[in-house]
Length: 242
Figure 1 (cartoon, helix red, strand yellow):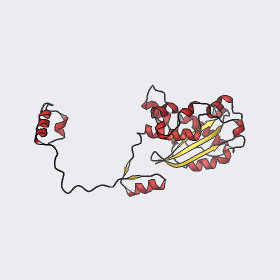
Figure 2: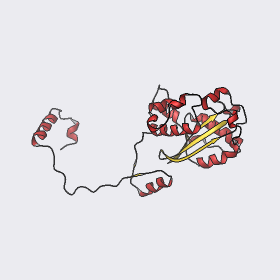
Figure 3: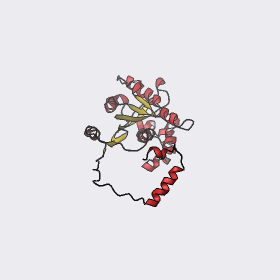
Figure 4: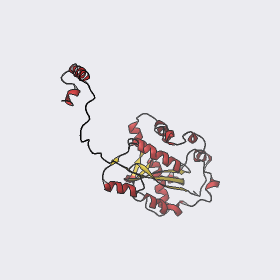
């Protein structure tokens, strides 16, 4: 299944009172694995970027002044999103900003039911624990996969594309980890390959024509049988051996 993990950086917290998106980053997933396709843009918000917010993402008004307007890029964003589910951390925040910007641009925003909130998933899995993106990245030890988590602690340490890439890995871990699915059907292989992902194809081996002889000697077999007798008639071992 194709999904898009995305993140935004903004001029503030309130999309309804004039705060704007200044950066968007998105990562394409197929069956929870990044395909390598990403989307990333900075925007001129046409309003002030206060110092308190600049300390978070490092994007000053001077840096953003020559960037395109969101309305100029809206079609490219919607084209990348297609009709796929959209995954974000505290998704309601990003959804409200995306909705407001698309309405300003005269575009139809994605429906609410297309959004998946990884914060809600994490809170169910780790009740009472911190479930910020940084806390989850540390919990899942994402530095093992090349993410520079230490740099995020300083001023300007957050960025939309970097955060989307981290969130894609966190989402994978929340869904069960990096265990690869074995793919048996040729139709599934073709679909995965078309999306740019690299499937693992399982080729079954033929059974041995003659079974290998047992390596347990008579003394070991007798000792095992004596041990099983001590477990009682309801021992699980008896249910799986003859």
